[in-house]
Length: 311
Ligand code: HEC
Image (cartoon, rainbow, N blue to C red):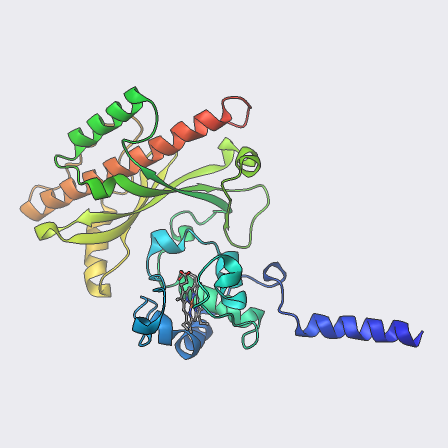
């Protein structure tokens, strides 16, 4: 009996000291508290605003990523960020220069940090509020599919964009799904045949891309764009820059939302003035790249699902 009690007591004790599992906790953190924790624990390496330019940057064996980069940070879901902060880089297949904080920060603190990190870039929920699951994959346009598909893709791109810059052909496609059961935060579905086969076409919401808009004098401005299943733009916003500048830019970009559809020739003509025309061309370029990214994803999707009835 005595033994039994001590077993129970030690189980309770272990339960108290072990870091809480990610899924047991509310996944909506407090950004304000997360900001304070980040400044205290993370800024030395990750920089004041998470851009990766902390004071000890030079002495790190590997540079931390820019936490403001949407393409990069959305390629990790909240539970991955949570696990990296708690157990450190090496336990998560990342570099050991990223220390684990399970000894100093509890589960709630860690969710607050995740919430702060998500506030540094545009999260996928900013494009489709109801996203439960998503896929992420990087593609090289013009390199995938059979000869005809590749040639057709490059032809369409050349028609829409006079000068195709090779670095723009490498892009990351986020494909978003809802699920029957609402998720606390979007789950990144790994590229495993079994998991991919479980995704239903009826649940697909659309696509998200993080691309560069070519501004005046060739300046590259990071933007996020989403397409629905009809390839219509549902959101187009800049992801960088000072708030005042970003605000003005976003007002312009918002005019293109609702435009574009499947099979449509990409040609936006909403402005007559010189600057406006520059925007028309720049947005047409973004749109052309985005729909070709979605086309490549859909090609792969057809190829993997022709044998079953998932799609
Ligand atoms: C001693 C320096 C150092 C400190 C302190 C540190 N990090 Fe890191 N962190 C790194 C490095 C270096 C990487 C990159 C590891 C890699 O890419 O393999 C990293 C990676 C990460 C990642 C994975 C995503 C990415 O950026 O590649 C997350 C999430 C992260 N850190 C969060 C935090 C948080 C939150 C804190 C504070 C609680 C923190 N880090 C404190 C050095 C540090």
